[in-house]
Image 1 (cartoon, rainbow, N blue to C red):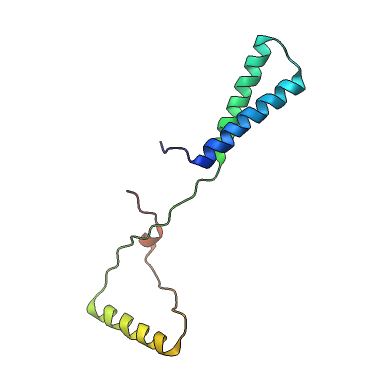
Image 2 (image 1 turned 90 degrees about the vertical axis):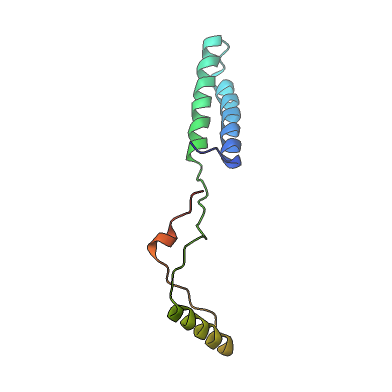
Amino acid sequence: MPRPTAAQLAYGSATVVVSTIAMLLLSQTSTGLGVAVISAAALALGLLVALTVPIPRRRGRHAARTGSAETAGATTATAAREGATGAAPAPESRPAAAEHPVHH
């Protein structure tokens, strides 16, 4: 199971604290059972919020590049041509395997 991020911990903790205080104030309960039920509900809500915070995804930059001498020569010629015209380089086409994140 992956470790929670700082954002997940912060959102989950803030949700537990704020929802516990709000529910205790709104319900005006003073019994131990009422406080326990509200605390459990706030904890469940905080857990739900922490798990639904979007996790940033890493993009793999370690894509394996395979090519022949012809491809290398064509790349050099393309770079020289772009340098002479001053045009921005065109985006490279990458195989579908390069789109998947690299897991370490």
